Structure formats: C-alpha cells, structure tokens
Length: 554
Image 1 (cartoon, rainbow, N blue to C red):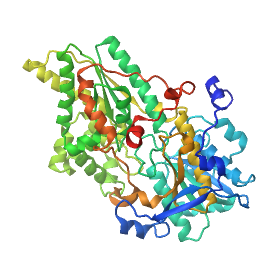
Image 2: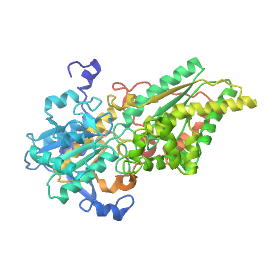
Image 3: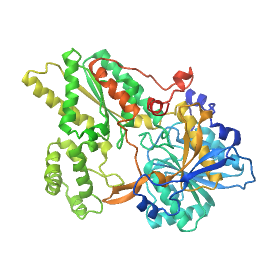
Image 4: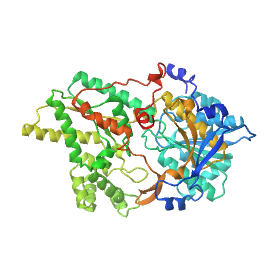
C-alpha cells in the first residue's frame, strides 16, 4: 500500500484490547474442559460423518504458566465474503504464535481455499502485518468462495501443507467456510496427518452465533455503516418529503442486519423475514401491509418514508420458498434437465420449459412475478446450486407491487396520496469498512485465541470470545467444537452437514423491542441519525456495541 489516508495512519497506532486472561498470560493459558457436546440436530448422522471431532468439549481459558515451545508454521486463509476486521484476526494470530515462539511463521494463502489447494502463498512478516492493522477489507491475502470438497482437493491441501511444513491451519470464514474447516479437520485425523484446523467466526449477516459465539465479527461495523447511510437517506426523505425509499440490506438467510439497523434508525417500516415465515404471509399480504403503512402516512399528509427490506425476504414467503426449492432442484447441476436447459438460448423457451416442470402452485407464483424477477430466478446459481438471492431486486419488486395496490385503492377512492419511490441496495458499502473499535478489539482477540488453541493442541474448534457487552478485559476466551453447531441441510438436491444458521428469534429481546415500537415509527417521523463510526471521542459514542447484542446479553 503506497499511500494511506490520515485516518488510516492514525488507526495504525490503535492497540486492540485483549481479555485479561490473554493479556496477562499470553497464549500460555490453561484449557478448562466442559462436558461432551452434541450437534444441534441430526446427532447420529453428524457423529458418523465426524467421528474424530464429534463430542469434543467446549474449552475456556484460565491462567497458565509459560512453557518451552518450538517454532511452528501456521497457515491462514480468508474464506467467503469480506467482513470488517479480518486483518485484525490475522494480526492477533500472528502476535499469538510469535508469543508462543518468536521464530514461528505465518503463511497467508492467497485468494481463499483455492490458494491453499494451488499452493499460492506469502510469508506474513511483521512489516506486512503492521501495514494492515486496524484496516478494513481482505486485501492482505484476498478471499475466495472455493470449497475443499473433492478427494483431490483434500490431497492437494495436504501436499501444500507438507511442502511448507504447515502444522496448523486457521480458516477465517462464515458458516459454510467453517463447515469446510470441520471437514478438513476430520480428513486430517482420518488420514493420520498431524495438522490442526481452527476456525474464526466471520459474517456481517450475524447468522453465525449461539451461546458461545455471541456475535460474528464484522456485524458491528457493517450495521453501523448501513445505519449511517440509512440515517442520511432518512434526513433526505424528511427534507424533500416526496419520496418513499425502499432500502434492501444484506442478509440472505436471516434478518439480523435489517433488525439492528431498524433499532438504530427507527424507519417507518422494516420487514423481518422470519416473522413473514412464522405468520405464513403471502407475497400479496406483505405488499398490502407495506401499502397500508404508506396509506396511513399519506392520510396524515406525509407522502414520504423509509422501508428496510432484508435481501433474503423472498425465500421466507411460503409460496416463493416452495417455488425457489423447486427451481433449485430443477436447475441443480445434478439434474438431468440441466444440460437441456443450458442449451436453450431464448428467454421465452427457458421460461416455458420451467413452467412446464413446476407444480401448479409454484407455476402460478412464478407467473405472477414481473418478467425481470422471473429471469433473475432462473439465472446463474451460487456455488451450492441455489438461486442467487442477492441478485433478485426485491426492493424494486415491492415498489412495483405496492404501486399496483395503491393505484387500486386510488381508483376505489380510499387512497388520495402520492407515491414516488426510490430503490437502494446497501451491501458492498459495509463489507470492507474500517473496523469499529469493537470489531478491532474482538477480531484481534479471536485471532489471538486461535493461536492459544493451536498452542493447546486443539483441532476442529471455532475461536470463541464471550461476555462482549462488558469491557474487553472482562471478555472470556476459549473454543467451541465445530460439530456442536452442525445440522443437515439440502444442498445440490441432497442432505449435507453444515453449521446451522442462527435466525432472528421472534421471542428474543431485539425483535420484541422493535415490534413494540414499529407502529409508532410507521405513523410518525421518529428518525434517528446515527452518523458515521466514531473512533475517537467519548466512550458512549465510540465504544458502544450493537443494540442487538445489548438486548440479548446485557
């Protein structure tokens, strides 16, 4: 990095904080074991697939004594989508293994798992690490979405590790990436390779969490960035008072981002996908609920507002969920129809083919959608063979359908307002932001914890740092077995072991707090303008954690 901004230069001086047990003992901690664990569901199937790591105990760190160690070589990869703080995880890992032994080496594999399989790596020296401390992005070693899943992939990974003398691998990623880490750990055990595998919990979506992983890193920063942008849009809406802004936010599998941003900004409407699924709302009901909020405000002379929409909404609507499931199976790479479908070049032919293969209910749902959405649904699939939901312009779909309902009401004389809408998608804007103080501290602690788990001889674990509402010195560090978070899910038309995503709990404090206030937010203009992330200033401004975490844990 040739040129850096004044802010980045100032941030290099920031020293991330550690839990007291690591601050005082370094990586030389005692690992206290709990009882045997079990997967969240499908216990027997998960046990059979991971016999070497299933049932491992949760471990917590306690004071230890320094011991003789030998230099080791550790490899690290960034896997999946970017999240603020990834560089600090690597920095914490680097400092941790250097504290275990000053001659230890850290190798960064470039471009994610592919770099590991293709043996593309670089030495992460102190000069490299120091240039990236407290910065956003994954550009130190880049990331990738490849998976280590075929026999030749595992063999190539082992060959790379043996070639460089790698004794431990750290996978920094989300649920899918850490599922891959668990598979890799089991492979090493099955084939007698003495190579440890440790994961670190990353995803801005916030859906990788449980009692031992209170929050995934990056969620704090990303939601603060999105909330700043939403606040800016709300200020504009309240200034012009003539537009409705439909803002789609990241979060395909869960609505944690939308919920947190709603708690921070108090918009006029926010859809929570999990509630839609729980209530069994149809697409038409979702649209009419939104139209009702718009009409209510228009009746009071307010023809403007802001609505937040999670990107995964469409998959939570019952008839749409059934449609997408059928499309995924129909267009799976293992489907006999896939080669024929790919040979169809005209849009009309593709649409006709799909409609003839769908059940009547799904065919009706498919036909009710605008052409642009139909084409997005049958477009390219993600690496798991599923619809790429982030490419579906749900915000524009809702604007279109809400407009239809309002025109219907206008013709009936029950709606006299004006509806002019703007569509936004806030996604990439938050993934590589410079980490908040919380994420800078948390990520550094996760990386250092991974080093301590390696020093303690563990494999098949996810780095865990808890008690996050308290000051960093009071945080509790340790590790949780990856198999403990697993269940079976349908991928490429068959059941696969994966880490279960954590959805918004409708009985939880964050959602019930939101639900108790949303009607007043809908009928009034109660916007909150969070402003940008603050690094320097009063603690109540620059060190506050997310409202979700406070409501769940405080």
